[in-house]
Image (cartoon, rainbow, N blue to C red; front, top):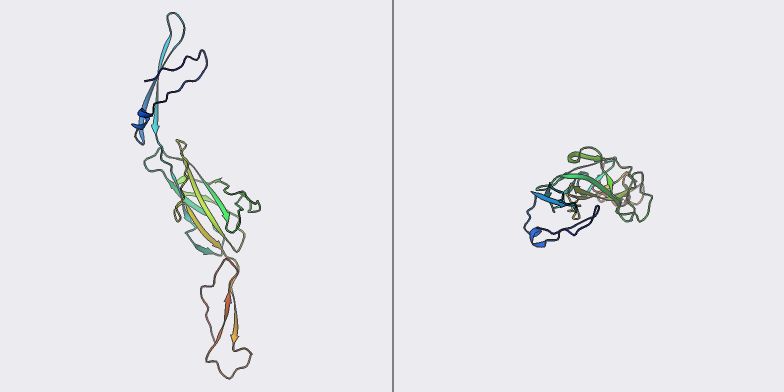
Length: 212
């Protein structure tokens, strides 16, 4: 299908055929036959066969731990998987972990570096059940994004919330309650007891209980 430009002993050639490439189908294997000829008399020729799988669909990195929008008071090890349905297979999964309210992403050690987001870090273990440990700063929310790359070089660019992008809060401070009524340590009526309850941000109070 092509007429390569003569390049001498060493060089490059290319084939540009938009019509042919438009007919190629996802995840199909194609054979490419290349014939080279030199300037000897008579000419020496060699024909070589190459195979390639056509894949233009990016894979997906998934996050299973932590679940979307949970709060935890113990350190969490990130975990997840990947998928490349109809593709050639995933080659790598990386995560970027941003401290919400800042542009500080995890460096592999801490969150001390400013304006370094996104910062993609390769995960550990098998790609289908990967893990990654993080040293979290307490009382912050975090946005975790997982990105997959496949063997054809397609890189994930879409990150669906709850699949490839989860937010969670690492909350290590207990909330505090105060009593505003009665206002003194002595009262002739306890018909109404009221007060306030606060939690260290970004955590929120979920329940207040009173016991006599």
